[in-house]
Image (cartoon, rainbow, N blue to C red):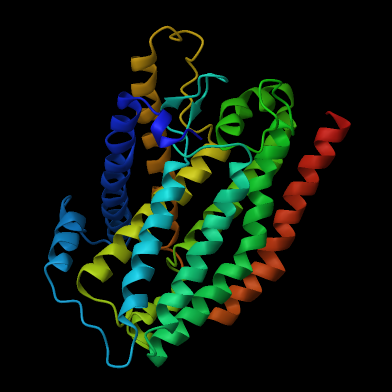
Length: 350
């Protein structure tokens, strides 16, 4: 990860525009529209217009943000900002179209060695920040929703870690001599398909881990059927109930950027990230390569979001105790099977 003072003017401009912060915010709004559109079509509804997510954010920023009596204004201000910043930091770690000078592969603006462990910490941070955002309001509905959210996040954290380690094991620890390890998102995405080509049987564990990651993504984003922390019929929006105005807008935008981050993480580790399969052919045309990287990454992300949105139209909400039971008794054992199967196939070399 480069220090800001060492970055060139072009790199700073790219970090702000495309494929940087501006691109991430635009994609976050697009993901919101796509999710709602697919969900609506699954229920035989028309769905929102294309610019509706942008209208919602603008409308919310114009509304008054009220702080309940006896509640800390500092914490109700700083926590939404931290939530937004955490989501944006995670999104900037996803490799899209910026090339590393040493390895020559696409990397993220905030990429560094062993960054795969840091992104797991960021995902856990979402649950912790949501918990604190609900607790500080002193509202019983918000506190109940916050407790449910933390319990749900902690339940799925271990299965998520196991599933994300499957592509790392497929590529192989230290498999690339140009890097100290493959615990780096950019290296895993760049070498995944070549590793599968050397041992096609490893795709079995990868498919299982991919399915688990989609399920965990829905839980982390608190989408149906895992929306009990924000249940509208029971908790009146759960941990979000006391937030309004620009604070609520910042949280909603942070959630959509979080969807970009988690969806991009799945694309990176399971679908080859921004790889287009033509790297060796157009290696002397970095601008074209960067453009194709962004296009292919976006298309893969759309597929992941569409799958998640379609799945949530098929299943109704499940209770928090059913969610925890699903995570520990079903999802975790399957994740263990995926990682042990990958290790076994790698060792016997079939």
